[in-house]
Each structure stands twice: as C-alpha cells, then as structure tokens.
Length: 408
Image 1 (cartoon, rainbow, N blue to C red):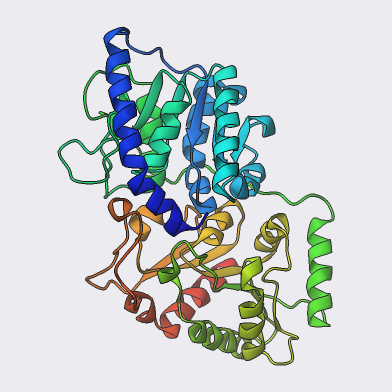
Image 2 (image 1 turned 180 degrees about the vertical axis):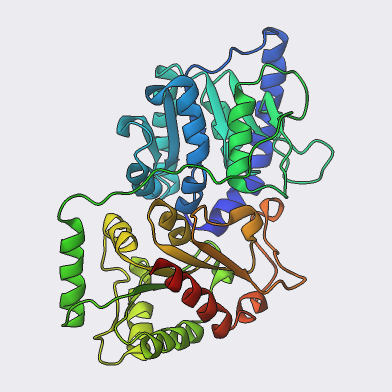
C-alpha cells in the first residue's frame, strides 16, 4: 500500500474504529477496575520506517534489561524486517511480520499476528508509531492489558480515542529515541499520574547494537566493487545516498548537488572511491548520477539496487563517510563506524538526528522548516523544497572534509 492510501485509510476508517473500540473499552473497564499488572511479556508496535527501528534500539535495550530478551516481541511490516534482524537484539522468532503489499494480505497477516501475540500471553503493548490511528487500533487488538501510547489531552491532533491506559504527552522538543525510552519506562511505572512519564530521560549518547560482517563478507563486497570499477578500490571510500524513498520525497537534496559534490571529491581526493547507493527503484537514477560524476565509471560507480540489505551494511562498515538525505541509511550507519553527513530540511535533527558518534546534521534553518510532523502525518503542503535547495555543496563538502580528516 502507498503512503497516501495508508493515510486515507487511517483518516476515514481509523476514526470510527477508534471511536467504536473506545466505547468497548469504556464498557469493559466498568467490569475490570484493577490496575493492569506490570509488564512480564511485551511487544513494541513499530510498523514503518526502517531508520526509526534503529532509533528504537535504546528502548529495546531498556525492555530487554527489565524482562529478558525472550520476553520482548516486535511487530512490524515485513519489508522492514532486515534491519531488525541485523540489529540482533531480539530472538528471530519474536519478530512478527505484517504483510502490507495489499489490503487482503494486510488483514490476513494482521489477524495471524494478533493470534500469535495472544497465544504468547503478551501483557503489554507499546505503540511507537506516534499519532496514527491504525497503530492505536493494532495495539488494542493485541489483547495486552497494559497499553502504552500518546494521547492528545487538551491539544488538537488526530483523534485516537481512549485505547491506551498508560498515556504520554508527545514532546516535540525531545529526540525520538528519548521519547521511545520514556514510553518503555512508563510501561513499568506504577504511578497513576497523567501524563506520564514523571522522570527525566537522558538525551544520549545511548549504546547501540553493532553490525559485524561475517568472515569473508567484506572481501566479497570489495571484489564486487572492483568488478564494477575495473580497478582496485581506493581510499577514502565515500558513499553518496541521493535516495530518500517515496514516503517523503521533500527530503531529497537536488541530484545536481550530489553530482557536483562527487566531482569535487574525486578532484580533491586523488585516490578516493565514490559509491552511489540507493534502493532497487533508484537503480537507473543511481547509474545516471554516477555517470555524470565519472563517465569512465572507474572511481565512481553505482551500487543502487545491486546489493542486498546486508551487503549495504557491509559497505557502510567499509566506508569512511556517508553523505545522505534524511533517510534510513543515516540511521543504519549508526550500527557501524562510518562517519555521517545527514541533510535535513522538512524534518529536524533535533527529533530525528542519527544516533552515531561521528555525525554532522546539516540544515539551512529556513523559517518554514521543519514542515512535517506527527500532527500532519508527515504530509506537507510544500511542493518546492527550498530548505534542501538552500544547502550548498560547499557546506556539505566542508562537513565531509572535516569528518574525513578526523578518521585519519
């Protein structure tokens, strides 16, 4: 299903469903006044965005420390499973998939996932999706007695009913990773105060899982790169990621800027290798950008659509610097030692900045930016991303040059 279709379903179907289930919950609460027990087996609901799964890693670690690895489950769309497997924080069997490729498949696999969670006697469900109605409904359907999520209280925003019994107020001034930790700690709180959480949460840095390539994976990828280039791979290795997915195309830095940046890297770093990355649907665009940077395809080539997800993680672990739009690769990089230049515009690094140590998050700081958030389902009226166009090649190159010098 496309992001637009998901938004339409969330708005027109989600509202009445939330209202109906809230009425059921009100009736049910009249016959069950005991406070729900503290978590023993819990599930995180985070359906979309692989990059956000990395941001949830500190919350996963918090839960694992409290109830044990075998008692934590993760519900997500199947297409996002590779990052959960790569993080290796939970048993593989505890990662439960929903197929969102079509509405019938979604309904069937959702029903199967709910049966599985009830069979596992999951008592706590934590909705990490924010303010979507669909995730609130799914969290309620898990059957968990303790349900954690955001509530609007006196603020305007998407109506989600009263499907949570542990309610937090969404904080637009706290990094998402810290908010995820707050939700996890709230799940274990016995306080009846509202809104939770009535304690401070550190703003990082947080320990993250590390991706370690298996023996031979690095050598195999280098061989693949050398076949593409027709020559040995030079250093430093710079990855340029023009991809930002269809979820939020406003995040895209202009392709001509990536081309100019790549040409400047090849000119100033005489032994460098520039790799263009991207998803399978970016393969043609990646080839075009790589050809514009280096027509001979010897020192710059595209691997967009030519690697598995795991191979891309291996590439990150081999590279020196990644320059990327605000998208998944910025966050995947936090699992490795690669330095990151992250380009922000429609969203803000204050909330969604990569968690890695060697990160430069750049933004032009226009008055209209950021223009997408939880309240507008990340759909902006903007059709001309001046916030991204205002980031100059000089600004990005200076950040890249600084990070490259620090790695030497």
